[in-house]
Amino acid sequence: MNQYDVILVGTGQATGTILPKLLALGKRIAVVEGGRVGGTCVNWGCAPTKTLVASSRVARVIRDAERFGIRSEEPRIDYGRVMERVNEIRRGSSDGFRAWLEKATDFYAGWGSFEDPRTVRIGDTRIRGEQILIHTGTLSRKPDLPGLDSVPWLDNRSLLDLEELPEHLVILGGSYIGMEFAQAYRRLGSRVSVLESSDRLVPREDPDFSGAVRELLEAEGVECLLDTRAAFVRPSSRGGIELEYRRDGAAETVEGSHLLVAVGRAPNTDGLDLDKAGVRRDSRGYIEVDDQCRTSVPHIFALGDVNGRGAFTHTSVHDGQVYLSALEGGSRTLKDRVPIYSLYTDPPLARVGASESDLKSRGKGYRRAVLRMSEVPRAREKGETRGFVKILVDDEDDRLLGAGILGVGGDEAIGMLALAIRAKLPYTALTDTILPHPTLSEMIPWMFDNLEAVEP
Ligand SMILES: Cc1cc2nc3c(=O)[nH]c(=O)nc-3n(C[C@H](O)[C@H](O)[C@H](O)COP(=O)(O)OP(=O)(O)OC[C@H]3O[C@@H](n4cnc5c(N)ncnc54)[C@H](O)[C@@H]3O)c2cc1C
Image 1: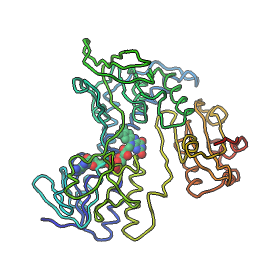
Image 2: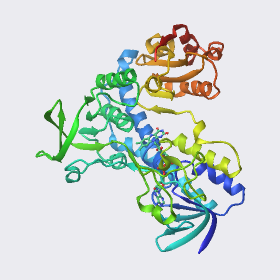
Image 3: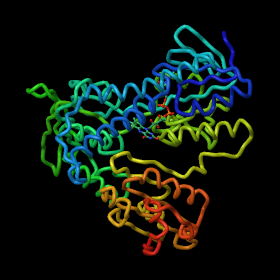
């Protein structure tokens, strides 16, 4: 049986962060991957969706061109070419990464599972590791919806394998993944209907951001069916999919050509035989870890989405940094992380730190500054005045607590607010900073003139 210092099960997003360091330390490493190298982000998540969003934005710009004094015709969408571009980008990254892994490590193509706390089995092969890293990510969660398996429903993976543009895409779930697909497919020419059980889209966001996201999607023709309970699904007589739902106690139906299920994620642990290793899971099925990604078995670590402490590529990469720090007796921990992410609609919604809802639930008073994108010169010049910026400040010590930017360039500008929050800076550090004109960022120092107090 081959023996290794470290076995990595799954090529999640921290792989590229941890392996160079482990190799430099002279460790003998095995990498086990059952699917496409590079995991969700490269193959089924960030990269393909942002590539799709970019194509759909071009369609939107062409439709909108007259506003800028440019005459154009209705764009003709070549969905095959759109997906070719998506595939070129994701396959290029995955293949390049795999070639590197095959050279730098012992690469095992297959699904790994535990045979005991130090042995991983891949088919008929068994390998042993001094340390084992579980980096297996999440999969789309399948809801308990009667009739679902009677129709060819799609998740984020299978949607990206379609060769033809859906005529009418029904999306179950109005959160991050559903919203990006909703806008992109609408812009590419599909009819899109979104069903969400909450009374607002992206319900984890503050109501003002939820409302603004809904407004911008509805203005582009996305049908938003909120406060709905999906009841059952069946094939329709016209060859499509019929979904019956309840709203205000009444039964209604929506019929589409395709159904995308986007109701959340579930940890990818089913095939791992964690019980044989003694690795504990929490009540949601995620692997329990301490603040340095160590599981209930000290030589086994769980990195990335599978530990339930983050759900993004950057949190997974940070897990890798925390694990490396733990190896060297360093002090980096998951606790120190400031939450940050973007919803990549166009314009994007970028968020960092606490939301107003978080602060209210903690009973904390705070101050709030709001700036409409229509007041930002650069946004006006770009003709992109949808959205607003909101920054929250501590009512006692002037520190920045959180921020959200729904607006063009927000996904980049949020970085400076993240740095300020991480460094525990007071907002006055920003008011003293001169930023280049014309940018969205230059307006942030001025926003604090409008700070208003909000009672707990
Ligand atoms: C549609 C969509 C869009 C997204 N967009 C963004 C975005 O814009 N920005 C962002 O930060 N995040 C985004 N995410 C989330 C992001 O993709 C994940 O948070 C990120 O990939 C981190 O996952 P991970 O590193 O934990 O593992 P993953 O990237 O999921 O990789 C896990 C790997 O483990 C392999 N594996 C699983 N089980 C086994 C086993 N038993 N044996 C061997 N191999 C195994 C899998 O095949 C997979 O390759 C998106 C997700 C989706 C679904």
